[in-house]
Amino acid sequence: MSDRIALTGLRVRGHHGVFDFERRDGQDFVVDVVLELSTATAAASDALADTVHYGELAQRLADVVTGEPVNLLETLAARLVEACLVDARIDAATITVHKPQAPIPLSFDDVAVTIRRERA
Image 1 (cartoon, rainbow, N blue to C red):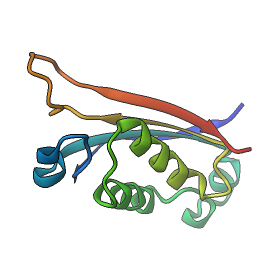
Image 2: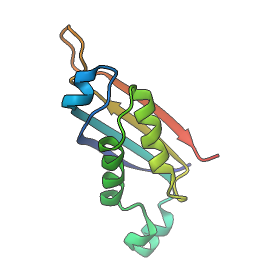
Image 3: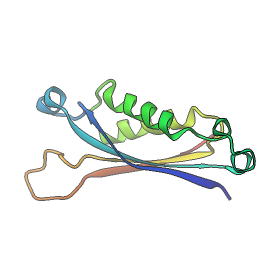
Image 4: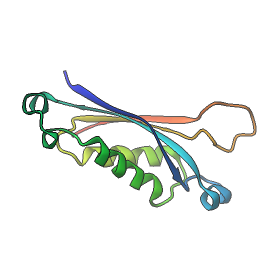
C-alpha cells in the first residue's frame, strides 16, 4: 500500500490546442496530481530531503505547461506524468489536466483528461 501526496488546482497559462488562436492567445490549464510513494522515511526523519518537495514539483509541472505546445490534453497529461516519474521515489502518478476555457460553443464547466502511470 502506497502513501499519497496530492497537489491540486495548479493553474498555469499554456498555449496548447489544435486551433491557431489557442496556440497564439493561450489559456489557463489546471493540473491536479496524486503521487503514490512511501512516506515512511520522511515521516521518521522529518527531513524535506526524504520526500517530494511539492514546491519543486509544482515548478516542474508548470514548466511543462508553459513549454512546447501540443495539440491534445492527452499529450500534455503524458508529459506531466513523465515529469513526476523522474523522481525515483515515486511509484505511480495520476495527473488530471483541466481545460476550463476549451473552445466549445456550449455552456460547460470543465474538460479534463486523467491518466495514471506506474514505474515500469
